[in-house]
Image 1 (cartoon, rainbow, N blue to C red):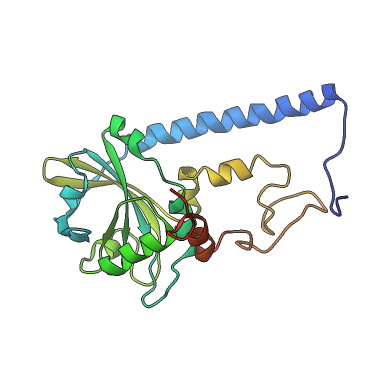
Image 2 (cartoon, rainbow, N blue to C red):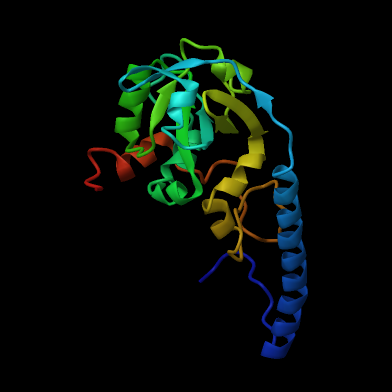
Amino acid sequence: MTTHALPPVVDAATWEQRLEALRAREKAATRELDAIAAERRRLPMVEMPDYVLDGEDGPVRLAEIFEGKSQLIVYNHMWFAGKEWQCPGCTGFTSQFTRLEFLDSYDARFVIVTQGPIKEALAYKERVGNRMTWYSTANSPFGSDVGAPPDGGFAVNVFLRDGDKVYRTWHTTGRGTEQLSHSFALIDTLPFGRQEEWQDSPEGWPQSPTYSRWARSQDIAALYGPESGAS
């Protein structure tokens, strides 16, 4: 027996009518997203310095991180020095990306860059079962220059490579990163949505403090880390 409010029950014809009205708005939003993507393709770009980051096998130039591809998506993962468990939002967000080979057909790559020293970053990657490729900007100003400074800041940055020259083409942070995630899109289709206090929901809908339903980094490790049995 539920203890919270439920959507009203109507006949099928009334439901179809309401659904069609909502679908018209959904299609309009899809067309607007198409228009935004078209404008994104028309953005100018800025040339980047020849940064050197740290990878699993040692120092690597920014242009080399593309591994021959012309396009690169970088998720700047928050890092707090001395902490065993890093940002749960970043940890959970990046745990979604387990199969990135489809980007090969688009001449693109998607990696994580963090301010943490590379050995610590790789150890954390292993602990939480992350499958992406990680790089460190601990010895480079790259993170600060692209909106992800030490002890704070997460971001998505996109780059284009032309030979040895690298250009920054797009950047977002905050809720702008949601468009890269399937989790919120799925949750938003549910009758009760994200169940967070800030959301506009009908009276009596279950609601919790913001972030309270998000998985902790420890939860991600338990699900996907080396002790989880996940393959």
